Length: 204
Image 1 (cartoon, rainbow, N blue to C red):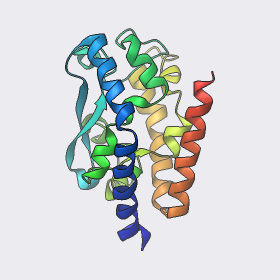
Image 2 (image 1 turned 90 degrees about the vertical axis):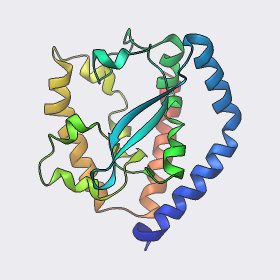
Image 3 (image 1 turned 30 degrees about the vertical axis):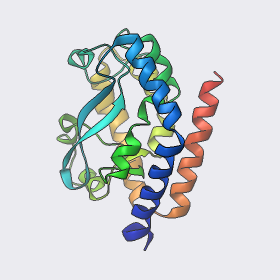
Image 4 (image 1 turned 135 degrees about the horizontal axis):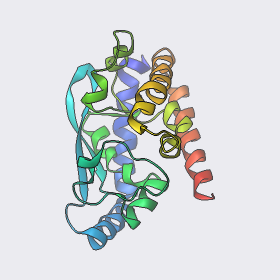
């Protein structure tokens, strides 16, 4: 019942409330990004959603303009493509807040496998593509486990190869595990653990 109806109601209610309560913070971040590097303030990227449908994922822009043309992955704690303001937005996951709009309009869920770009989705095998049977989310267990993904990839001579061969398969394994655990209790647990992880990271 929760998977079919409750999850969407959960998403609509909390994304709507979140956008209202966080509006002052969202406005402040908007002005900081505008002040630090001008327009555009938002960064929209095509990601693969439920059923393979392409949608525009929204973030506050944390990189210099056109930085994504130099690579899709962010590497290291101080990627030179990331703006000074963007560094802190990423550290505290504040750049992800506009995705509450993606949740409200139905492209995403609060909890679920992180949406990937088509380039990497095309590499999925038949079993891994099962994760496309549900909406992608803002957070999940893999996001918590690989919250330091930038530092992990920095250890590789070829970060993209490291992502494809080591990080991505582990993430996909965790995504598939989530498919069998979808429940209100699991989603609340992931949201709670995400808040704890972000809080701990802010103290480092």
